[in-house]
Amino acid sequence: MIWLLQASLNDSDSRDRVAQMKLITGMLDSAFDQAGKFALALAETTARRADVGAALATGDRAGLQQMSASTYDYLKRQAGIQIFGYHSRDIRYLLRMHKLDTFNDDISAFRSMVVAANRTRRAQTGVEIGVAGIGVRGIAVVNSGDTFAGTMEVGLDIRPILDLVKASTNANLAVVIVPSLSGVAIDEKMPRFGDLALAVSTDDELFANLLRTSRVPPTRDLQISQARIDGRAYNMAIEPLVDFSGRLVGMTVALKDDMRAGARTRTELWVVALCGAIIAYVVFAVVFQNIMARRGDA
Image 1 (cartoon, rainbow, N blue to C red):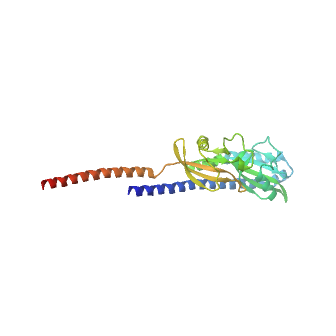
Image 2 (spheres, rainbow, N blue to C red):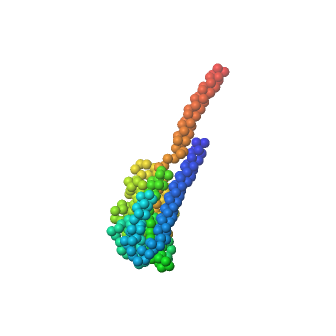
Image 3 (cartoon, helix red, strand yellow):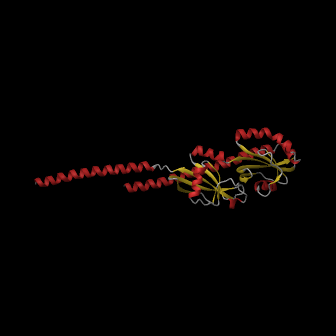
């Protein structure tokens, strides 16, 4: 009976572990999706302004800066917006509100999302790696009347998104980039572990130890397993990270302490079994002694 109960508890723990990690990755996917929609909504709101379209069409950088200053300051303070800028028709970054001293540089070689929005004349949203690092971006098409004027983008840093999911799930999360797959230059400040780069996480030391001591290969499907880091057991979920175009650029990793619900039950079962065995032995010994005594009297 103990063996059957142990097997049942093991199966239950396995199902609970998978369900729990799927819930965490599902919440992270939802958070990325909502962040992308939020960024695109803000970009579209700004892009639809007639004065913005007219200024972008004429390359009026000073005018765009004046029109955007109060909006960007408010969104940065209240909504955590990190990226806010305008791209000209020839795919040059006309104005970065988040980096005013860098402008008019050609971004066609490494900002594929901007290139896609520029060429298709359609809004784009998703994860992308740029000069400011990896983030969730929304890019809207800007028109001046019926004439295409350029594009405008709003972007959110990924760290607050991870922190939000951690607060809800009590799991640590990280975004790991594979430079050979991303196709863009990765910031040299990112910690490297072979062909992996730790872009952002809720616990840098924990994930650095994981990547240093364990093999964490890129995956195209959700993988749920267990890992041991610094003597502690964790449930681990690895999910592919794709950019706006669907290209695999890295992975997200979730770690949660392995606190099996059945551990206490197993201990209680063994205690009960041991106590039952002791009681059974005492009862058997007493009964056997009485039987032997009766036979002796006979």
